[in-house]
Image (cartoon, rainbow, N blue to C red; front, side, top):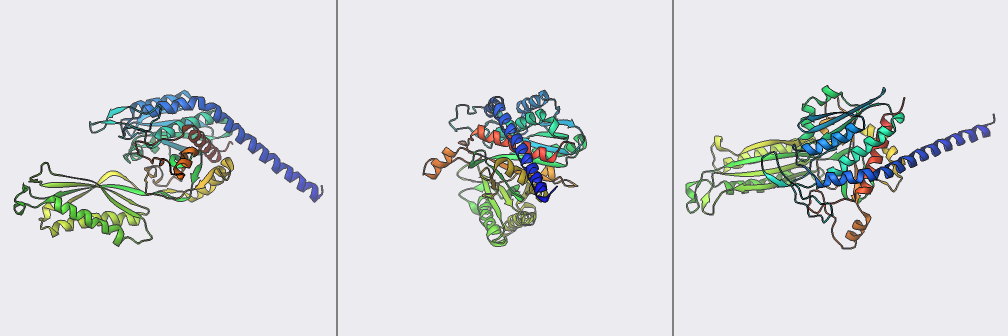
Amino acid sequence: MSYSTIGKSLLGGALALAMTAATAADDLTDAIAADYSYLGPLFTHFHQNPELSFVETKTAGRLAAELEALGFTVTTGVGGTGVVAMMENGDGPQVLVRADMDGLPVKEDSGLAYASTATQININGIEMPVMHACGHDMHMTSLVGTARRLVAMRDQWSGTLMLIGQPAEERIGGAKAMVEDNLYERFGRPDYALALHVAAGEPAGQIIYGSGLTYSSSDSVDIRVYGTGTHGASPHLGNDPIVLASQIVGALQTLVSREISPLEAGVVTVGSFHAGTKHNIISDHADLQLTVRSNSEAVREKLLQGIKRIAENMGRVAGLPEDRLPRVDLSVEATPTTYNDEALAARLGPVLDQAFGPEGTAPAVQRGMGAEDFPYFTNVEPPVPGFYFAVGGTSQADLDAQKNGGPRVAGHHSPFFKIEPESSIKAGVRAMTVAVLELMPAN
């Protein structure tokens, strides 16, 4: 056989493979499109019936029922209300795919025909309005859609699927609770962990991903500032905790501006300041609630130590005795930075690019300091390689209107938050399905 003939043969083989891949991609796209008649109403159900963190009982029940009906072995109550669905399909890696389930204590004002009117008593016994203001309804629907595709394509993958319905992402506690409930000891340690998040403000259906830093760390900090109560007309007889707390708030602003390099990212926000009961009474304490964000563990530690140093020493400046210095408490609502494993991102990136084309993917660009508790699934010993990507959720019409001076696209956690579900869910299912197929090739 001549070199020319060999070349033609190789070219023909490459074209055949490309055509086969294209046909398979078209088949997957068509199957997902056909399945939306099932997934669309499921999304509406989740949206209209949101539940708060750690009390997602009905949500977990519905998710469990969906997965059990597909043939998964389902366990509920993991880490509180968590759901674990397992399916073995021959030899191969174990892949974890996670969707978070909880809504937010927000009264919906999106104007959607299927807007939530739900209320619920939270874990502190307080009745609150509830809304899926961060897209977890889309995440769960995409998980079910991915499960439905992979069950239908069992001849194309080999290994063990581990699907997770995670509680309390909004309180940054559900992933940790599941891991501490012996998740991996009971169900096996995954070889890879995957998750997605819908992104308001990005074109619906676009896949956004990157390598390395993906989300910031987050720590909730409580400061109790002590004082000596007295009549407001006789401040010299007491020690005013509101004045001291105000000085602490001001001093905290120097942490990022003067102690962190301008090339590093950090946020210290005082989100709550509560003190006193009446106009003319100086209280005996004041309470501050802070959120702290960073993009590295070194900066994170420096900020947390700086908060403690400033609070305590401002108490000394005010003349408080050592046993009455401000008390700084770190909340359990804390999570480290989220990093996409570089090798895993290098493997899955081309798969997503091929599935969606150059216009259908975009590089992840950090525009804020949002946080995720997904690292609790990956930051174990030994580490589990993780990959977290976003799916655009806003219609092009809304983006164009905003660009031309129209209504601003509502962000996450807003009462006006909404997504374009069909394009987002179809893209989420497709992206997660091709990622799993890449990691679990058929034997």
